Image (cartoon, rainbow, N blue to C red; front, top):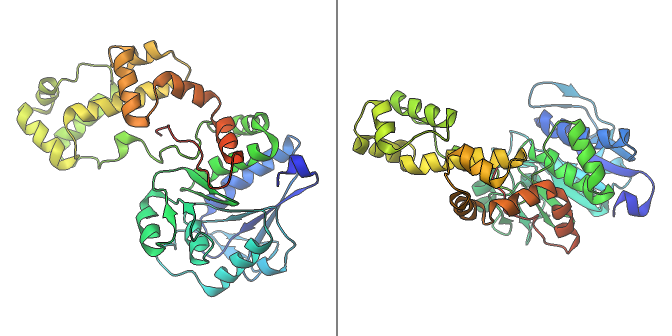
Length: 344
């Protein structure tokens, strides 16, 4: 399947349509184009169901190279997402195009809501898949034969790959690149594009501290901002309540009603995010624990095990070789989901 093993140009078909999200097209395309500048040989072919140019989500018109049913076979096909899905049914012309492409492609991939197109074509029946976190519930309800992974960056099941929203398409393209040419080229491309080569498929799509809504009460927003600005500060509930000008009991009630968690839980999540960022930057576990306000490396270890299932030292080791691990999992057999254990 991979270019490096088979030799010759690796043809990548990019399926677009009216309403396609421009960034879904541009991000993965840049990964393969940058790889070409470093010695790879990917041939990108933009195609649409009827061979006509399309209007993207931004209103920008882009031309295409060919009609989907009048192209030679592709090694990899990328089915792009668009804001129009899942709000409307997938049209018959688009369904026919993706089915035709799937018959002759080694790898079928979708970016963001492109998963709805693959699912509507019946290509994900009995398979695991993901899409943008906002639409995973809709995907599961609309296509009950698809096993939806609601919190994965991307999922591989056999020759089918599905990914979450927008930037996850870049993560998927980097993983495909590594599968073809190894981790060194993937790392060089990531560095050239100034993106993190750190997110394996099972990583959470969003930070735990961002899962709840931002509070409506101004005093509570001030508390949010103060904790985020100084995670290691003294954020005991009485001090937070004094900052907000209310009693600790009232502050706790507001947190539960507007945020869905206690003040202490919110502080822990902010500190966890801060510590993770420090580990990503190369700080030691002890330094990350101290600077993020955990007090001890053991406290940080317990938080990591709770939130991502592995201790911080193991997380840092995976961070350094995340895509090597993701590719290894993918090569071990069909139906694999790239390794879990990261929180975005």
